[in-house]
Length: 463
Image (cartoon, rainbow, N blue to C red):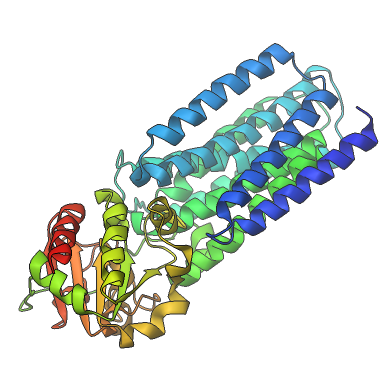
């Protein structure tokens, strides 16, 4: 293919990426956006294969077959509750790919004794650094989410100073490689090893409650690493795609941080979530919980004119999204209005609840962000909280000693009546008591969410 035709085709692919990303911002167009982006990537891959004779087509086809097979298996086998872990792994694999490409280009130049331009040398070092941090950081995030290791912050004395020393060591060794023309390989391997270690030490102090932000940030890292790799191999479409992923990930991370009342700097310097579970002295001593039954809950919902459903990770664990949709349909047939309040960090990854409800074909226009729906709770007859905890905890407003103090929450406590579905009185990711559970307006419906909702639906049908 001619260079001009290649660049024009890359431009078309880039436009498709941008359009796809734009459509991904709305649940109503997300599926179309995903397909458009995928088609753009297919175009980019085909053009790259036709334009660059890097490896044999047999190797490429084998890689496509293995990768596609694994992707198809993961898409069908991975449960919705494990989707955050899969996203974390995919982020890590993206970072690992950038590490391998950047490292391969460096080793190739050393093998043929080629003096690389200064800009290429710098981007190789950045590709290796960011790719390695993303790889191991994502694996740690996966391990925490999968409960292979503790989800609590792992701290040690001098942790921030140690991370700073690791980062300075990488910068120093990278600068040495860029500035010294002689072929010396040990600094390169040292940079790789230290960067891999840095990915671990940056993520281990982060608690499970903060994983949505971490996943979003690691996604951004994988995009930045891909963009750096694009500069290394001088592939324009990879630069654009990486920049889009990197910038959108940073923007989403900032939205997540705002929703949790934390700063992005707190994430970047590895102290993010270290305070989780500490500080508050409030306990449940002397407080009482009011329980309800599926029969009573069904009666409330049947006569309610307005209902707001607040989904949380417990909804995903119970796989109760379909029964929630059935319940909402019954309430609406009886004259009630049902809306869904989505907190930005509900679940374990950005958009977790949106994806979960979309799987049950919940209409997109019934999903509302926190800012859109918070004012409506005061006029709501029943707020149904399913598996959510910290995102509805009034301690964020009332307890200055709470680790979530100042975090914007859904105003579930301001509804006329609150029904909370939980297995028990266990704390959320922040490890603190939820004041909402002891609110006089709150009734607890204990048990598996899916089973409890099935009983509610049965009673609704009988009313």
